[in-house]
Length: 97
Image (cartoon, rainbow, N blue to C red; front, side, top):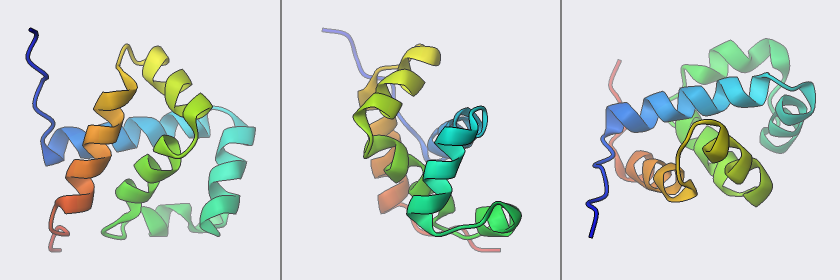
């Protein structure tokens, strides 16, 4: 049986950044993310500095099976890696400034 690669907080954060870039590639994807989160495009940079922002990105991705599958496929990942990364961020202590 193949061992699942470990998902660290750092790798989970990098994956979330990739997911945000993926959503930003298409206005429809980004627009839906902004609508669901209540963010405005101009406040995205400020929001990205918030402790749970990256968790929110992966929550959004994991909550949309089509989007999750498309992202995972584009990045040669399984959807489970994305959900594990989301779980790691959900259980991590917020980074201190």
